[in-house]
Length: 443
Image (cartoon, rainbow, N blue to C red; front, side, top):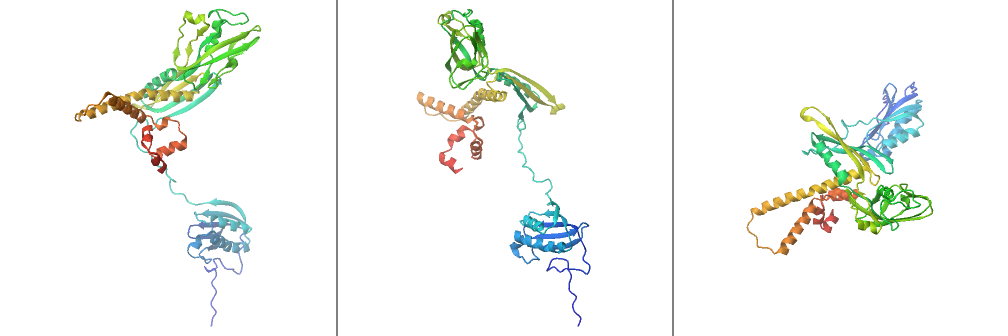
């Protein structure tokens, strides 16, 4: 009876059986295909001919165990064992798939002693990758409009410059916004300055004092140019006490903690003799420009008013650049801002924008009151109310309308609190007050 011929390269051992003359393969390519259900390791020569292969299934693993790292390690060891016997010394590794056996198979290959030229991940990516969420369509003309700072520099402590662009805008909008922003920057931002100086030794404004190089008028002009930064409301006092000879600068001003001097090196006076100079100062925070009214009574007690320049913005310009053709013509607004150092140009732009929003809120109130009157016109007669009831109702309605148009975007909240309020569908202060503490804790 003839003996059966043994099969060469059966699936049970997962590799090609030995031949009479085994090939020598010094270099090859190892392909690792790792899925969630199985791991297949195939070794080929440089021409792509399969030399050996193995998988977690052929190694005896069943069910969910085929996707484990240990199954991948066993499959890689069985596939590599044959090619190591055939003299493979160098190999390239191609890994494909998101399975858990990727790293385990690679560690087994490295432990075999084969020198790896490189390891490449050839997992195919889906077409177009992960697409970003579609933008919500909006009919608003400002949906894509954005502000960007294109230039910012500090020339010195008393001069800062910033250049901003706002685009895209429909034809005509750039001029409207530019004019409003320029007027708001120059006239609607609050600033701090010295508004009054007092000294009993000064007979009148245009006199000179022995031992001081500058006249009284020149000292007042130097005090007018001093830049201050503060968060105070109303007025506060400060004073200068210095002894000569020497220079008196802004550093010699003794002010409250809420007031900060922008440039301590600003010159005030020069004392040429060993005399004492004591001047009381009045510091005020306001907006715009205020001309000092000089009265004889002020000069008698040694008090001299100073022209107050509260404006922290020294200059503001706007220019417009148009592009496009026909009905699709659009504009870019350029804003240039110079400040005295008490505010940065970006802070000035933010403050001017908030002031403009506050100026337009009464128009929204007027629209709300008009709608309220039209609604009551169609209703029946109401019982008469007393004067106090009417006054209380008007105050309540006014407060609700004001809170309705104060958005949380204007409050400069921390990002974490802001995101929590947005998730709770809270957009205004009125929405926040209408929520109870229990409702806020649920969300």
